Image (cartoon, rainbow, N blue to C red; front, side):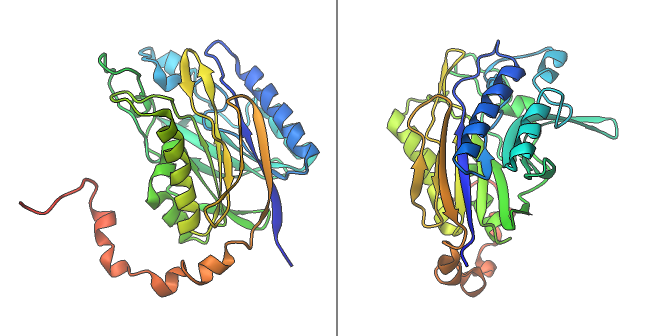
Length: 312
């Protein structure tokens, strides 16, 4: 008996700075309805799906910074998305900026959640690999101030059972790090859900556009193949507040092959009927971790951050 689930990557076009959360939620509901009409049971929305990508701006007023963050989830604004999903029996992944205030300490996270078809949140992830820089850099072509506005995620890379499948999450820059996938792979992950907001350009150097998309897909395809897992990557894309962001939302099989991909930089839904047993043969052969991994030689990975070349 095969284990299939139809999954949709719900790419969002640009969300301008002046656009309210209600508008973003309305757009996501329309994509959810389209996914339902096509038979999808799980929908993956992008990173920071409720607002523009605000880390491109220098913001110094703490209250203004906090205004970009969600204090609760669901909130009054996002409740209609939860209601629609529950009514239709669809689960979803949602990326957003989370303000956490526990024990009198305020933390800001770039977060995502998995919501089950019954409308309940079953898992939360907080972004670990924060890119960019902390201080405003006047000589940079672009600002990417994630290190200024977000704390490093404190939940690690857990996995959960959703639809009877083992699923995990990551966000944007996490996809570029092999450790992200391997930690989930060691927990038997069968599908990794991730959202991203990736700019067209780089702050300090020029890079051809084709390389941006190549590296985007390469990192996800490698993570999928090397851990025999499905990967669903969903972008917020297009020309947002005068800044371009790549699209390329896609669904990747455990073989590393892209099986569905968005063609635009606008709101677009792509879906695929995923056979969750497709990666089983890889988990039993090439990537049978128990038989083939040699952890006695991997110590440097968890004990060292920067590269240390041998002496000359």
